[in-house]
Image (cartoon, rainbow, N blue to C red; front, top):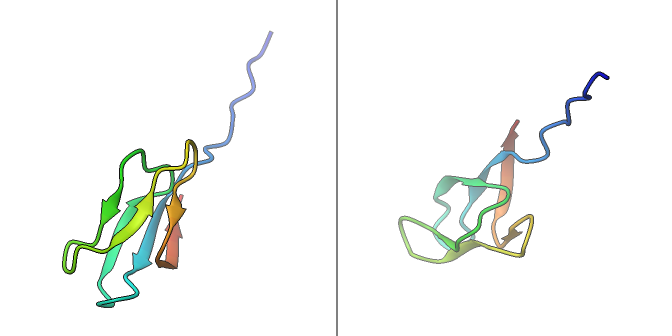
Length: 62
């Protein structure tokens, strides 16, 4: 029996803070609140799976 490999469904996202325009990398399935390192605004909050993003996604790294 051959096991099928599952595709990786998570990734890292480069996001842009809506307040200060700082660009930061966050995990798509963040399990804790991610804050902007410059101004402290919440960029992502956990939602039991994928994180709820409150910032603009610039790019995705798989």
